Image 1 (cartoon, one colour):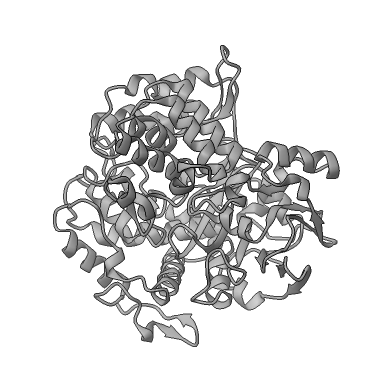
Image 2: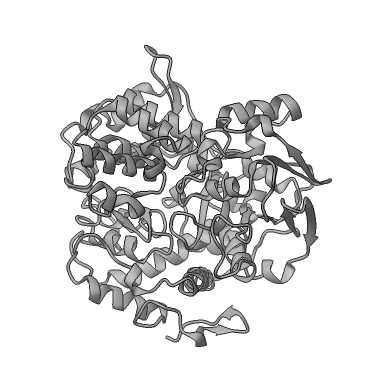
Length: 561
């Protein structure tokens, strides 16, 4: 099995120390990325660690495919205990960081402890340096990137940065890279903020040798030549269709369609797109650099989930207002989905849907924890009672789009996901849209025959997050291509994906998670039966916990057939 190579660099920012540890035994069974981060976290983070405490650890890791020049491989993974969900969580980001990370020669970097002073940590193939930066307190992401480039000659593609939201421990703060790409979901930016780390930079010329088969160039060529709506409109290309089939959350989840969709649709976003945007080594180029000529506003996006959270869910039907919300989240370091949903909850409580000025003011207040922003910075799960609104979250994470009330398999996927109401954990929704023309497409209603497919999708997505390969490669990555690129049988890869999902679940079980957390704020047909079937496919207990017998010597044993 192909896997990333190199030692672990363990950095204690409180003690100002950095140690190199050989982890070949972990690498041989972990591929890289999410698998590597999860295995290290499961073994090294105390089960009772405070997400915002010194004992929590944050792992950055790439995979073997970051040693290729193949499209869809400009990504990397971050793993730690989430301040938003209180469980173990991995998030990944695109952009141009991953190749600079591999240049350090490390397979993973671990950040632990907590600094007394605000610091930047510089990681290179020559070692680790700590730089006190009190002058960057409350600096925005662009301001911090500008400082790093001016002082150290490192562009934003070398950086992971938090904005004021991370420093102020907003529970859905992002870690930003390449200035406008985000390790978005789960609040890992607040983990860095709690450790008083403003940024971590990566640089070097010590990339380890990982031989990737020639198939990489075939895939790269197909990505370059493919005609695909995402190349023009990114993920917003699905917006009008999702609205048509009643899967677009609107007005804080009170409706499933939005009458103002034309003002924020993929067509409107494409009209504002002024150049192509991509990630490292990717010819698919699905990103969205947008500009409003009248105001001069420039941002990258919004993507479809932002269109939902700050658009339809907030009652906004103007694409420029939406672009500004997206920009503010990038500048301050906020997950656009959780931020938008939380703002929408406040709008619902105040009957202020459609008030763009209020929305933009709330984003700034959240980032700085000022006034009502201090309350909203806690996220929907912790504040819904105070606002007098329903709790639209799973495991503390606010909902993405592709609504499970219409797409029932995606609804079950939101409930089972170890990281909460996130659509990318399993990505069941593409199989339920009525226009899907595939042998494994499903009717959108009900859960019949869906739990086994859900397990397969969670498992293969764990492999994608470990390899690391973009989820938007789905039209290009067949079973046999996974086998060739990673030098492993497809069933072996699915088993490893299942092990990662089970490790996450076991860690979270030790923190009190069980079946009671695999819930939804709405009903779908045969949910309890579908959930029980899912547990059976996983080999877990009926209460959603991992059996003790699953672990042999600290490792996950395969589930019985």
